[in-house]
Image 1 (cartoon, one colour):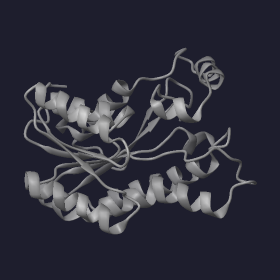
Image 2: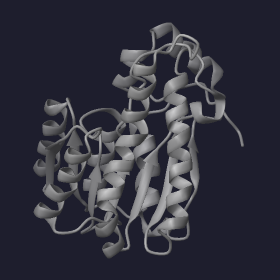
Image 3: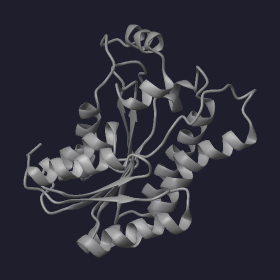
Length: 252
């Protein structure tokens, strides 16, 4: 893809303070986009992303919001539009396992939290952003998970169920918003990010590597490349697609 393939576009990336979100923000900026780096608690990470982008001559803005709040999700989009006056790309990246537990032992509170963090947040931001995305003939990319296809083994059942709901939301929006807005999703396998440092032991990560045909886990940059592709003109005829990035761990 041309390094300037997204020149002039405005992209809002949720959960951009760390991991896949941070790398995606940097990659979009390298390709000429103006970036809104959303964060909830990772203020230092988001500010570092913005500093890197600006040091390279790009334009970026870090904005804080709790996306499980309807008011704050709408305000995030409003503040982004106030700064850049348009929105071309929305990357719904924010999400979390929250806590590992079996479905049998999952409390109702944890179940609701998993859905709030992983799918309701994306719904609230997307709903607020749709008018601007329609005006720009833009696109949405949702970050799902390999666990949608394999199940949430190892205590990630609530997370997998929520990501499964986000998959259905992706395909529903692809129909509802066509032909004005393209909507696609990525399906990452195990990616070496702080997320797994928090929720997976070193032993579990080593086992993931052994289970992956390519013999390793993925990197945030590899996922960011797929997101940038889906936002580019090279993917202009793609909508409702689920793009696997899992090293061969799951084959359709």
